[in-house]
Image (tube, rainbow, N blue to C red; front, side, top):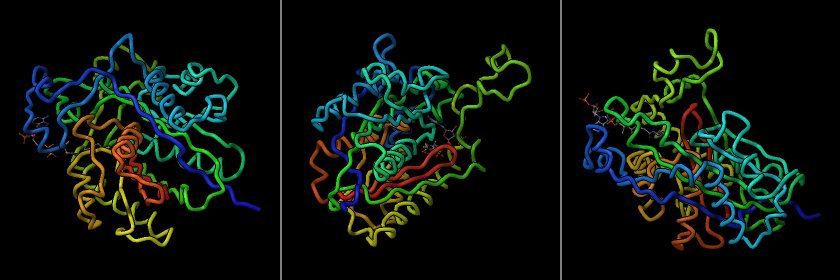
Length: 335
Ligand code: COA
């Protein structure tokens, strides 16, 4: 009997048309192009257009591209796994809205709230459901509208300059070919650091009602980040989880054709690259163009890497993420 594996059949992404440069941000806060580029590598990011883009519409556009490129009919999709921390509604999740836009009524949907690791968690879920034989074709999506969550004043400048909007998607399908498949996925989290990078409000555990004048004036609905703590943990966990995926499949760093890290910060990626002793061309970066798009960053980067011819059949590709929670995860793929 043939063993069933999961493979990525096709990729797609969507970024909103409005480009916001570092220079544009100087109109709202005391910052500079030089500071942002030196600390993060970011030159510009995209912000959604109100009335045109929604979290779910961006995810739908990315999914349609991925389905087209896979030559998979939308009706073949039998599960949607959707990662976002910036859903259209507080509930239900944006997966429901995308399912509706795609005309997939009745198909199961799962919303994932694992921040920057969300896409890798979603991919891992798809991999498991396919390997058990429960589903054959799964849409895996990461989509974020973060521009409305940021405090774009001096007070919030350490966070606001980092994040951007966008969406990416992958069609994951069953295969019996052991040479072209997701080899393994590795998921981790450490809730002791939940408040190092978080949005406090609106939360349910408040005295009285969850949304009050006090909550609104408190400003805790903006992203709060301890940048130094995030940086220190990220560099350790990225390297660890990449090594874990390689060791689980008896590979070494030099066997990697491409590492596609979550686009958190160019200095983090560079630090990890050096720790792993990888040449520059083996680590993909596009944070310069899009900033950190949280759950969307890996599928956007993976799609661009593929479009640029940086991934070929048979290549060993590692996806690795770290983010709020803290959470970190990896996926090793034989393309
Ligand atoms: N423009 C100009 N100056 C800024 C600024 C901005 N956008 N943001 C902060 N500063 C200032 C600070 O106020 C501080 O000034 P001070 O020395 O007068 O107090 C100075 O720059 C240094 O601040 P600090 O926070 O120590 O800078 P840093 O070198 O740690 O860089 C980050 C800040 C956020 C870029 C960095 O910590 C980082 O990249 N962390 C990881 C974040 C990340 O990847 N998050 C996503 C995780 S998924």
